[in-house]
Length: 172
Image 1 (cartoon, one colour):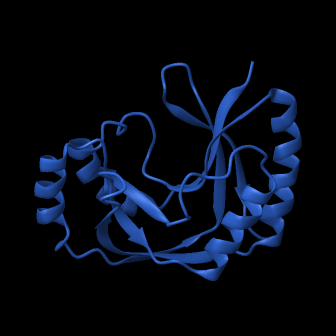
Image 2: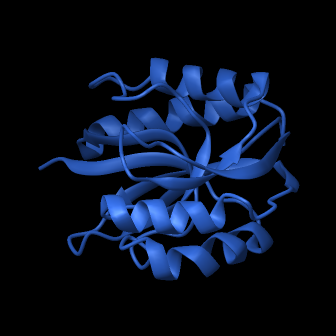
Image 3: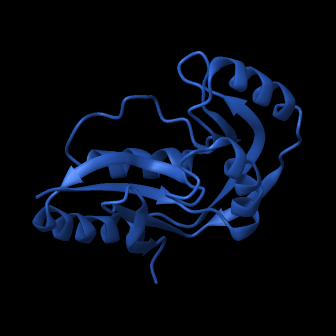
């Protein structure tokens, strides 16, 4: 039987704490997964496929050096959907890592263009979204940090996500 997997970057505790201060109120997935930047959205794979994929992911991680991410503001995907997020400034390194990871995973092409972000609110009604986004979008967010790893996650039966394996960027 296939399992759901995903590939993410977990930011520092400081940025996670900031995101969670909003998520506990505005994100029903708060308890299912820590704040993260999605590099590859949910895909299905067998145990055999995952064994091969982890080898590939180690190779990809070796080729990419650690890089900076910068959360710069609170934004929204409206009108596509009512998701409120910390915008992560696009960078060549982040884009290249995303493309390479997605090139090596079969399955559907991701539904949306790659917009690096950390979700802080979702599944809000239109009115809630307007109110929450209206009050949050003026909040200053300015956080920069170095990313030195990414994580392959898998989904448990209760819907929560847990780390399957962690990949450090750059040659050890």
